[in-house]
Length: 67
Image 1 (spheres, helix red, strand yellow):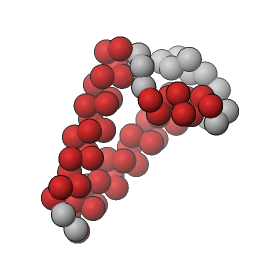
Image 2: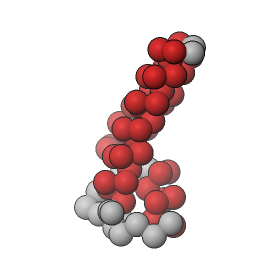
Image 3: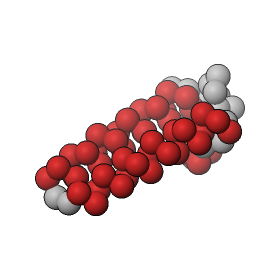
């Protein structure tokens, strides 16, 4: 799996988990959705993503967006 696909999968899971937690437990969990969205916008503008660094360290192959 490439870093790009791993980052997209991780972001998707974070959004889905935060929506479920916000719906069933507390609306404050929607802040995690906001954080994930802001991080995706930031990464698209700068090319830097903290999750990409972690996935690179665990051995994911470089992708097109994150190397």
